[in-house]
Image (cartoon, rainbow, N blue to C red; front, side, top):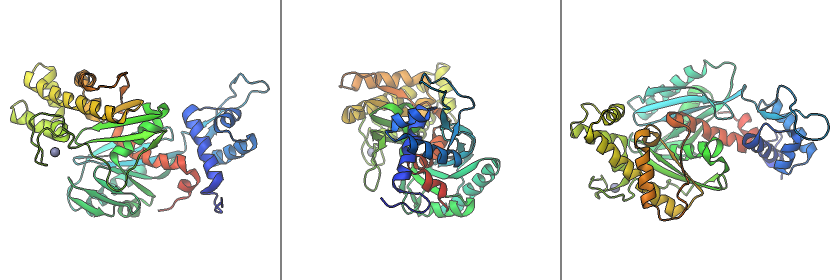
Amino acid sequence: MVETPQGTGGVREANAAAILGAIRAHGPLSRGAVARHTSLSMPTVSRQIATLIDLGLLSEAPSPQPTGEVGRPTVPVDLNEDVIAACGVHIGITTTTYGLSTLRGVLLDSVRIPTPKGAPEAVLERIAREVEGFLAMWPERRIIGVGLAIGGQVDAERGLLDHGSLGWRAVPARDIVESVTGLPVHLDGHVPAMATAELLFGEAVHARSALYFYAREMVGVAVAVDGVLHRGPGQSGSIAHLPVGGDVPCPCGRTGCLEVAVAERAVLERAVRAGVLREPDIRALRAAARAGDAEADRILTDRARALGTAVALLRDIVNPELVVLGGQAFTDAPDHLSVVYGAYKENTVLPDADIVTTSRFGPDVQAMAACTGLLTRLYARPFSVLAAKP
Ligand SMILES: [Zn+2]
């Protein structure tokens, strides 16, 4: 394989990626342990680790730790959490979230603003200016770029966004955000981005196959096998119209589709119509249910049952080793999570149903996911990403 002068691409970069991957999953590790995990030779490991330390990706642990190995104590190396950071921006229908993450997926800070209204170009420019101001507060960090995650359809290659609910068509999002921030921008769909966060830092790290199920304003799934996310051709797959029963009419003309049964806005509309709430506010709906309002509880129970049923259908189709539930429909709804799990267990037909877990990212999932799209690229091609210019 031919290497470029900068060392990007080729065997050296693949070796560096393997070393980073081993340390991310199992670190801190001695050089000998890295060699065993990666099947690389000791000279290669030592040389690559020296380069990765120079680049700010790795650092040596402060003091030698006993490793149980014969000979002098070795200094373990770990991811360097103090230098490099990835910015992530998630543009939602009502809320935009941006944040900054370390290499290990620790969110240093995140900010939520209402998604600005107006022409898509102007909206993106305003968001990019907010992000620029936010990043200026971290002068000591080397920020490798901006991960932009959004629902709708993403053309990562050309940097274009389509978003039906926002009315966006082929919006040149990458160019706009790059020109304001001066940083390389990477686009990703938000469900694949969240699934990637689980694969890098969450429950799915050690699973051979995993199904990620997301629900809040929209629903989506992503499937990963051997740590690699499946990305189909063109549009991402959709579970919006998965039939889960019930009599809620869907814009598609049928009734009982999943998304209209569980989307936060749809649930809140139902609560307002039923007189449970005056204003659509999910926290108020949960508080009403907790205070004993039977109608509020019924609305949230119906949502949880529909979600559990859908999780069972998908689990039975895909048959993964692990199912991760993410998004505020799960992580902000502890009172109704047992209903989700109950409906799932009632409806799944495969044995060994205890494979479902809830994402540890909670309400930070959107910001974390946007950062992770970029971190995934860094872990796969560290030299290329660090050398990238917008
Ligand atoms: Zn439908």
